[in-house]
Length: 465
Image 1 (cartoon, rainbow, N blue to C red):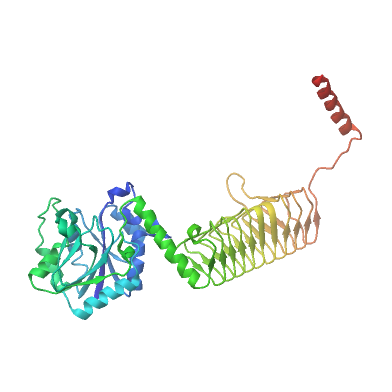
Image 2 (cartoon, rainbow, N blue to C red; image 1 turned 45 degrees about the vertical axis):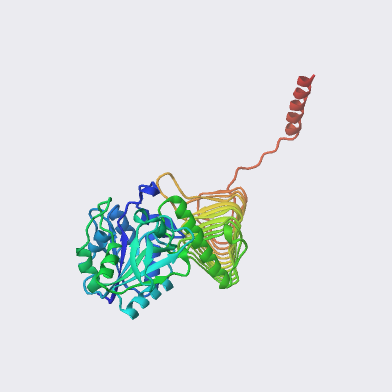
């Protein structure tokens, strides 16, 4: 076990969320609440993590995977009991950092400073506190005349004078393990909830004349917890503001940050311009000098330098440099566009590999298709890749030209340099360099069209009379 272990309390149900999903698994900016806490702790240099799980334990463990260790709090009997459950798993650690699984706004720098202060002073407890304009609902930090912390008083137990104190407890602590574990054994559920309060450990340290330190966070937003959907949205707004500001300071132009939604797991290169209504979700990577939006969603995709994605949906796809996508384009999972590819308006592409400098300008569906370099695909072309039971591949080789309103009935191959005439339904392979026509012969009947129109017009005139 490392010198410091972080214990994350994540066993609560979160009734105010009114959700079947455990509270800590609700998502903000590409991560669950719990994943945000873990990310901040890891970035602060803490390697060992223990997650105390309870309500929805299986779901929480499945969502996080094998990274942290897990301990089960079988009954939710308060924060003191939850931390006591982690004692065996934390054996050997000299310092125990206690975090809450519903505080997604914590910064790594704050946690690093808290641990540094605790290790430097050698106190029994170091508490992360904040000063807020409205302390309602939080435990108040009580200090003596010398400024030392003497107690944490919960709101329901506070006197009117104590309720006026604006310094609050964040629920985040550093403990000396030698003090913590014996102190937890002495906790008693002497409250109307019948729970073991971790805050009572502070009173025990003061009683034993052990030093209790406090680090006051400079930005009180960091310690805000999420207890309902309104607070979830408020925390999301803070995260988006941070993410967008960091990107803009790094050289990305965001036209309207208030209407731009970028996950913490996404990255954007310098001199990219992002227009309003753009969402970059999941593990998305955008290269330099791109133009995105407006009204664009890109999820779990890579977009290389100097590409434009306009009013499009791009999911689990890979775009090479200088691609042009949109407007009103849908790139479905498994799509690969090499350099210089154009996928224009009202184009849908699924599980396709499209070669360099090929063009799919408009009104086209391609599925399960391999397209070579320098191919032009006319408007209204579709690959008929599904026969009702399984999907079949289509291959279009380098330099081929597919005329407008063509149906390519898979499995089928169009050879290099071949030309498919407009309006064709292709059911067999087209050799390289060949011209393929597959449409019924046109038959003209002189005068019949005029006579039909005339008779209809006559009937309309008679009816009008």
